[in-house]
Image (cartoon, rainbow, N blue to C red; front, side, top):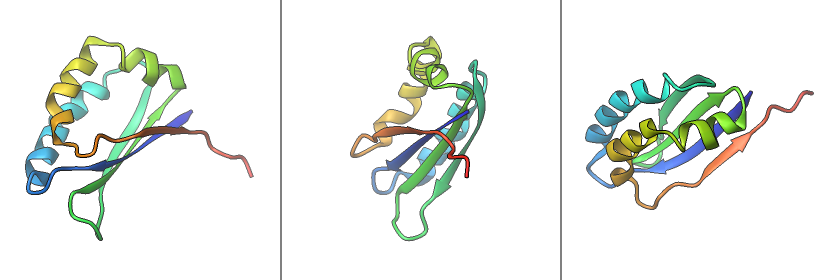
Length: 97
């Protein structure tokens, strides 16, 4: 399993509209092959800042399966215009201690 982590900055005053759009977009990502779960967290200290965490079975489920799908085009249409600056996506793997 891998964890996709994205720090999102939503344009000022658009937070409520963004959260509504994200609820709609959640239905898209949750149907993708290799998808496990996701959550969106709102920052308490900084208005408009969010953390998106998505669990995938493997990296390619996100980078190839989702990102190269027609469903991703709808995801982009719903969400990408809210971000400024555009976010950097990072992927993590659990360290066994």
